[in-house]
Length: 636
Image 1 (spheres, one colour):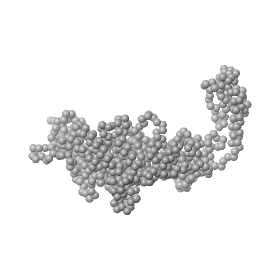
Image 2 (cartoon, rainbow, N blue to C red; image 1 turned 45 degrees about the vertical axis):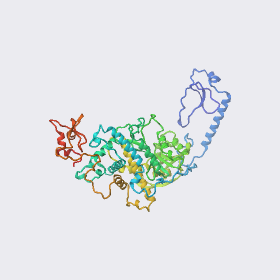
Image 3 (tube, one colour; image 1 turned 180 degrees about the horizontal axis):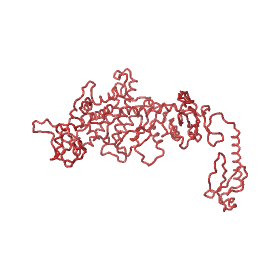
Image 4 (cartoon, rainbow, N blue to C red; image 1 turned 120 degrees about the vertical axis):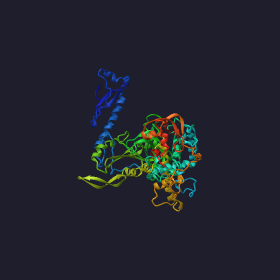
């Protein structure tokens, strides 16, 4: 219930809160705002109870203090009303409750962040103690990532896994059913063959070993035979079977992932501008780590957080998103940026990112760590200046090239909006608001499109120039990435690690050539691009000479194959009886029907394939005659 009028000219109300505390509230009538709803004292409350001290009333001293505060506010309001209007373009009037925004004509008194650029190493390639003349080939730079120690570990893990499963899969072994240990040299050939398949894509992996007329001349058989390639992919491992940590979702990749991240940082000191963005690796595998991003060209796949050099596209650091272990997190983007930028703290780098990462709190914390940053921002988020939130209304009235800005008190952050075809909003800690460049835009005037020079804020211009580091890296990878269908979900990421190593080694090789123009061993053709680099790398990893002839047949594996039969009574392809019934290989090839059989062939080239062998069907005989040639993937 309202009490008697107070001694001031403003209308006031007695308000009783839930804890029976009495307060005096001012009736807000400006700008058409309605009073806030509080719990009003009911009429049955006696007026005398309001003035009692134990009910939360005010004594005369408190009333005099409130009168003085209200008089001061009225004096400040009257001075604001008498002030002359500003001539600059404002986002709100002087009587508005919101802070004012400014345009090109208004001076920006704030000084943008000044952080000296002090990298801990010289910018560019860093090969450590390697001699300048010792790295002259493409394979030398690739082996900076896949070192001999890494290859030895991979071979150890693969052999340990293969010996445990070769009993169940005798086709992976030699003619006697035992596994032949893979060596570091053969592992390099496997990686070289994978790179070759990215340069020369085919619809099926088996076609690389085909001798059909249209596919004759492929070089896959120069690396290894098809059966050995399939066997290596089937048993390939990046972790020892006895050392798997099942609490880690990336246990299958953890060893190589940590090694790749450390090596990428050790071999290169990036230039000052770095961009941070997510990358999607296409995958159809069954994994709970697959993500969906509707605005990406690759919508389904594994998501990687990537930080790359804006000038070269070198992948400096990355991480695989395996899901949140703590449930739903609201500051995931902030944690990602702080984690990726941790190795470059207090070195004066500039970071660029999109609206997924940009926030005032992130920019403030990056400044404390010695970074200056700029990024696109969504004006509908919290803690954004209210004078810039009416961007839709302002967009209808503004012309192409118009701009307005406001300095946020939190961290001295510049909030800016620029009208292009639509409104672009950025937050920056390294730009001055009034710095601008001239750009050309197509503007429609009087029903005709004309080219017009308009002003563009320097913050947006620099963002367009430096944000494409990750996109540049993606373009280099996607040109010749590996298209092999993996047997296990994590092999997709292993193939992607190979692509990262190839692209980074290509960037290092090009910079090394520029630094050593007098070295004749580094001389290449004038239009030397990534394709030529991958082709040379694939040949060097496979030990293929430039003038070598095209292999017509697969190389013989050192598997202690049985000798050629000395008599016509001896044969290699003999039906054997298995303990379990399996689908006939030929029946499924011809009719897509699953016909069970207990017989299989262990001869060379058959790899333990099951075949029907009964009165009604003799698929074993058909397969081993000329009638079965049309059902083979690579007719000989």
